[in-house]
Length: 153
Picture 1 (cartoon, one colour):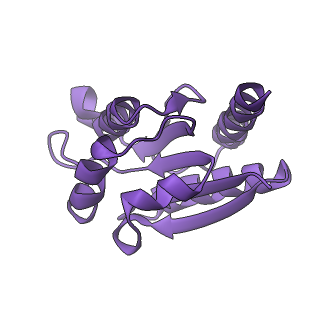
Picture 2 (tube, one colour; picture 1 turned 90 degrees about the vertical axis):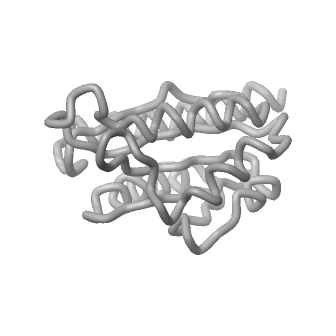
């Protein structure tokens, strides 16, 4: 069975909601999903799954979550060749150039680790509570599943 790990960092709960929507969409595709808060797991956990997802928040002027710094630093050092990844996150467009910068930083870390990008990085303004947000997140999950399937053929 295909396995996915969805890791989230959230202060307001928005990124936990993003992670939950992605997890449910992956489960609906028949994928076994483990969803966990970033401070409760280790980047090496991604070595044991097929699909890797991070939903981080950005704060201040583009800073990564404090509780996820070790995770982030370890991620770039892994060898994730053969793994499919995606990064999605919630932010506030009020912050302009710093809007969802953590999404971009985690995307680069996955690429450095050699993982295959399975979906275009997704940035959600505030809570993922509109039908459009939910559809985008479901499409994000579907793209991850499709990329994994194509790579395994």
